[in-house]
Length: 179
Image (tube, rainbow, N blue to C red; front, side, top):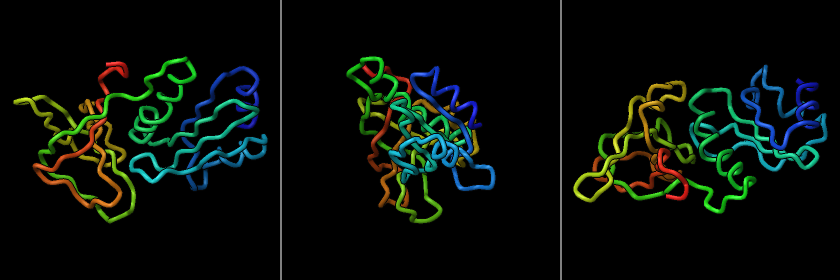
């Protein structure tokens, strides 16, 4: 892993690692980056899925350490890595459209964890409003709900649940940034 990251440092403009970023027995990315002299900018974000996300600078090269869990990786790519890559490419609009939607269905955090939860939802326009419905079970390993979604609903850190009729901020992940 050390050799691969050293080689990437010599050849890449940006490095993205997938997995090995949390605190388990096989999570070595943080230690290896430290050995290579990378400067940690941040490690861990208060969100679910995708909390074990890290960002370093390795000789000036941005390094994103995204979680190995598939849904968490997809969320981190969408919410953090994609906007950063767009900025590096010279774009001024970095984020997908964020709008307010009306929630249908139900969502409840298992505990009040102080994290923003990004709920995979299906958004549709109806009678001039944006209606958002969970796209399936929300477990962080359930890829099908990510594949069926076209948006992410942001459940605030201080909220425990969403109920039908609640207004919620939504990132429209199928809309272009400059829409």
